[in-house]
Image (cartoon, rainbow over all chains, first blue to last red; front, side, top):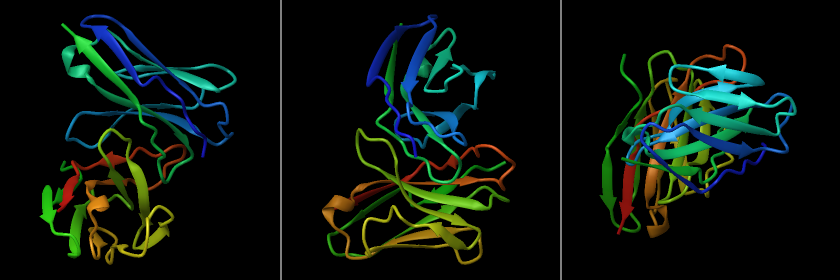
Length: 108
Length: 116
């Protein structure tokens, strides 16, 4: 399973766009890229998943370059409630391997 | 519909005791996973069930940990002779039958285990 590297923490202000980049140099052909969000005292929650190019849903966008060695989670116009830990994972199903994630703090 | 539920939400026990943690997955989900999470860390995989059988138990730290899913739905994680180092939040997740591509896992709120 590919290892991922992402920033330990990021700060932002309400209304700004936040981009969190994740490196996964050893991603395998079958691997998908998935992002989870976790609030304190809750289990992780699925945000978005992609294989290549760009994926967008009601919550976020995921940008994946052609070589797939990195990906960027984009959160448009963050609010205070987006303060959480964001995990980037790569794999091809079954067990998820979490790193320490990126702790996003949104300020008013 | 109901999400993944876990009971109890909190469990305090003494070193050396036996504990059972229960997970009720989302109805119809065939895969069930157990993870544990220590403070400041991401969840750590323990075991994965596909139906009633353990498809991958490579994350169980030692033989004090055991999990069952006898009817392919509810699962119980059992820890014998608990140690203080077992203190963590134990998370359960489930996912639907594979539909091609990566499967989303739906997590429960976790059980916070404290071993005194």
